[in-house]
Amino acid sequence: MSTGVSRFTDLLRHRLVQKPVLWGVIGRLPLYLVSLSLTLHLLDEGLGYASAGIVLAAYTVGTATFGPVIARRIDRHGQPTILVLTAIVHPLALVGSVYAVSGPWALELLLTFVAGGTIPPVSQVIRALWSTLPLSRDERSTAYSLESILAELFVIGGPLLLSLLLMLGDAGTATVVGGVLAGLGGLGLATTKASRQWKPEPAAHRDLLGALRSRPLLILLLLIALSALSLGVLNLALAAFTEHHGSAGDVGFLFGASGVGGAIGGLWFGSRSFAASKGHQLPLACVAFTLAAAAPLLAWDTWSMAVAMALLGSSIAPLTAILYELVGSAALQGTVSEAFTWVLTATTAGGAVGSQLAGVLIGRFGWSAGFVLAVLSGCCATLLAFAVRHRMVAVAEAGPSRAVDTDSASTSTSTSTSLEPDK
Image 1 (tube, rainbow, N blue to C red):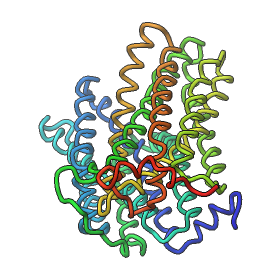
Image 2 (image 1 turned 180 degrees about the vertical axis):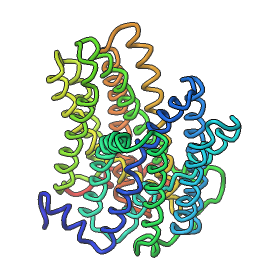
Image 3 (image 1 turned 120 degrees about the vertical axis):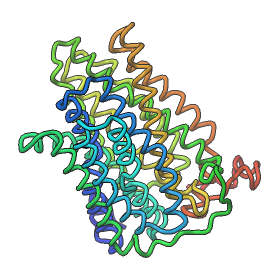
Image 4 (image 1 turned 180 degrees about the horizontal axis):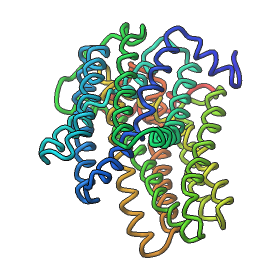
C-alpha cells in the first residue's frame, strides 16, 4: 500500500487524473486574481468605492445566480459542452467589462454580471470527477486532500500572480489575463478523457430543489457555512491585530503562514489511511479546527500569530477534504455537480456573514473579538457534527453516486449502530 507523499504521486500517475489536475490549476489560479485586479481597475478608472462595490456585487450575484443553473445543465447533459461555452463567454464578458468602465453604467453592470455568472465551473467538475471516477477509497481521499491543498495555494498564488502582472502592466490587463487563464483551464478540462467519458446520471427528481432534496447535503452545507464563517473573520481580525501591534504590512505574511500550514495539513491527511470512515472523522476534524481557531487568541506578536495561523491552516485542509468527500457521497443521483456548486455558495455566504459580524465586534471590542466569534462558530459546527455523526456514517458507507436520502428511506437507518464500520 502506498504511504506518505507517494500517495499523491501515485494518484497523479493515474491516467484519468493527471490532465484534470493540470487544467484545474490553470483554470482556478485566477479566481482570487480577478476580483482583486477588477477592484483595482475600477478604482484606477476613477470609480469611487461605493460604485466599485456595486460592480463587484454584480459579479458575485452573477455567480450565485447562474452557478446552480450551469451545474444542473452539466448533471443532465455532461461536462464538455458547458465547459467550452463558459470558457468562451467568461473571458469575453470580462474583457468587455474592463473596457466598458467609461461607457454606459448599465452596460458595465451587465457585462460584469455575465462574467461572474459564466466562470468556468472547473472546481465543480473536478470534484464531481473525484466523486465518480473508478478510484479506490484511499485514492479518493487523497484526491480530495489534494483539492484542499490546491485551495490554499490558490489563495496565495492568485495575489502573487497579480503582483507579477502589475509589474508588467496595469490592473485592467491583469483582469484580462485572469479571464483568459480561466477560459483556458475550462477548455483544457473539456478535452480530457475523464471529462469526455463522464456520463450524466438520471436524477430521481427534476424540480426546483434538485440537489437540495438531500437532507444530508443540507446538513453538510450548514457545517460548511459555519466553518466558512469562522474563516470569514480573518481578513478583518488579522488586519486589526497587525495594526494594534504596529505592523500593518504583515497581514500578507500571516495569510501566507496559514497557507503553508494548510498545505502541510493536506499533505499529512492525504498521505494516510484511516480505519474510521469520513462520517466518524468529521466530528474529530471539527474539534481540531475549533481548537486551532482559538490559537490566535494566545498570540502576543506577529511571529506567535504566524505560528497560530499555521496551526489553524493545518486544521482546515483535513476538514475540507472530509467535507468534500461527504458531499460527493451525500449528493443524490444525477446532482453531484450541483451539490458542489452549493458548496461554493455556502462557503461564500458563510464567509460574508463572518466578515460582517467580525467588523461589528472588532470595532467595539478589538481584534480578539473576531477570533472569539471564529471559535464560537467552530463550536456550533462541532456540536452539529457530533449530533449527526450516525447519519454521516450512513452517507459515507453509501459511497459516491450511491447516496440515498436517509430521511426518505428510513429515519431509523440514520441512527442504527449496524451502520458503524468495522474497526
